[in-house]
Amino acid sequence: MKVGKGWNRSAVSLGLLSLAASIFAPAMAAANTADAQTPTVAQTQRDLCRQVFRERLEGLVIYQEPSPYSFAVGGVGVNQQVTLVPDFVNLVGPDGQNWIQISAPVPGYISNGYTGGQSNLVYCSFATTTDGVPVAPAPVPTPGDLCRVVIQPKGLAVRQSPDPASAVVGGVGYNETLLLESEATFPGPDGRLWVPIVSPISGYVSSGYGSAGSNLGGCS
Image (cartoon, rainbow, N blue to C red):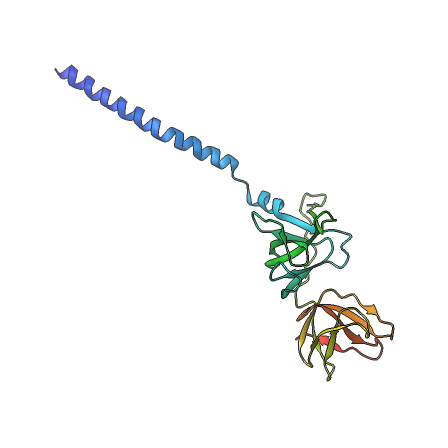
């Protein structure tokens, strides 16, 4: 009888061990598989990294919504990097352009061009120095870099193109702020210089006659 009881206890113990193995083995295998399939943070960042195409010389404006009529929240220059949001998609805006949502350098939307045309973005090139250290990306323009204050007492008209005969699409009052699309200037037929703006409305304003002084000052 003692031998029988000992045998029974051994059989029960072996049964419990077998049951435990059958329960935990698949779970451990699944965990190992998940670990193997989970991308690293660096891989994810690389997958979502894009650069502004080198032929897009004026860079790109970052908008709050996927529309050129939305509020501008920043900008990125040519060859500079942006980070797409996970599961990004192309959104067709009211102007027919494709828009992509980004999370950096500031959250917002940028234009990726028109369907069938040249994309405004390319995959990032992760250059390294001879010692293998990644090269730091160029500084990204911020709204502060492109912010200006109207110092012309009469305010400024916002025109559709850099020409005093162009249609007026809005205006910016004295001491009000605006956001440049870029630091490019366009000489008009009357000798005035014009700059493109994206906020409070898209268009062009006169920055003055150059040597005679500017209609715009820096934001404090």
